[in-house]
Image (cartoon, rainbow, N blue to C red; front, side, top):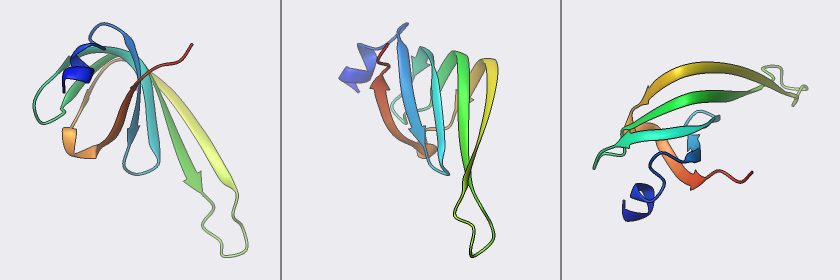
Length: 81
């Protein structure tokens, strides 16, 4: 958690369960890795449902502020520019 503390008010990359990724500015966190992220770009990867079709569709959306529950967080990393 000390490394996460160094990323406060910096842009971070967060990988979540369920094939989701977030990029945004880390505003706050706690010991459970609950996060508050601002200026968020969320990317969701959706794999094709058909057996023969392994295509991956990408959905992107943005939010001003987002609360992320800590048990869904897999990775927190400083965002590379």
